[in-house]
Image (cartoon, rainbow, N blue to C red; front, side, top):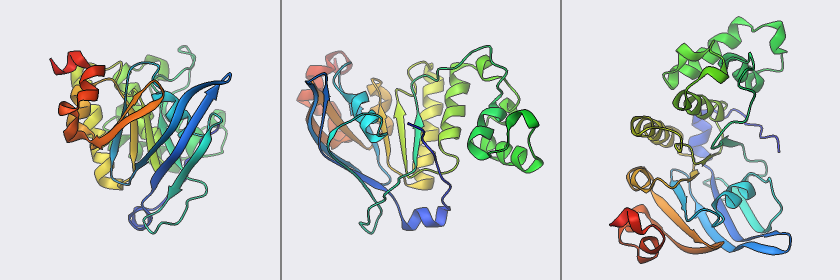
Amino acid sequence: MLIYISKVAVTMLKKCQCSVKIENLSVFDNNRLILKSITFDANHGEILALLGRNGSGKTTILKALLNCIQYIGKIIFFNSRGQKIKNPKIGYVPQKLVFEKNSPLTVADFFCTNLTNFPIWLGKTKRTIEKINNILNKFEISYLANERLGRLSEGELQRVLLAFALEPVPDILILDEPSSSLDTKGIDFFYSLITKVRSEFHMPIVLVSHDLIHIKRYATKYVLIENGTLIEILPISNLAESSNAKKIFNSIFN
C-alpha cells in the first residue's frame, strides 16, 4: 500500500487531534486465526506500546492499521470532536528499510519523493532544498542531506526515516521495532525524539518493541498480546507489577 502523508497545520492539529479505535479485530492466515477479537484505543497524545513474544500478533496489528492486510472488525480514526477521519494520514517507520545499498540515492533525493512531483534527475529547486534542510534541522541531521542512504549508520537511517514519516505531519505515527539495531545511546536519543514529537503534535504513537527498559521509561500505555489474544491493556506504570507480563518477559523483571 502506498502511504501518502498530507501536511496539516499545527493549529489544525490542535483542533482535530486524531485517535484510533480498534474493535474486534481478527485476522486469518490460510484459514488459521492469528488475531482474535482484539479491541483497544490509541488516543491522541499517547505512546502506546504493543508488547508480546515473537509471533504473538503485534506486527499483524500494525499491518491492519496500515491497511496492508485483510481483517475482520473495525478500525476507526476520529478527531477530538468524535468525527470520523475517512482518510487518515499515516506516518510509518519500519524496522528496516529495504533498498539497494549501492544506490546513488541521497537523503535529499529520498525526501524529494515525498515533497514534490518534480523528477529527481532534473535537479531540485531552491525552495525544495530549503524545505529539506529545515526538516532535517529539526532532527539534527542536516549534515546528512547529500549523503547516500546506503552509507548511513543504523542510527542515522532511523532518524532520517522518522523525519520522513513526519513530513508532512501525519494523523498517527506507527513504529515497528524502531530501535532494534541501535546502541543504548542511540535508543535514548531516538526515544527523546519520539517524546518531542508527542509533545509537539499530540498524535497517537503506536509502536512495537521488545525493549521493555525504554518502553517503561517513554511509553504511556501498553497492550499485551499473547497467541493473537489481548491479555491486558493498562497504563505503563502497571507493567512492572503485571503478573501476565512477568510470565512472558520473566528475565526483565528478575
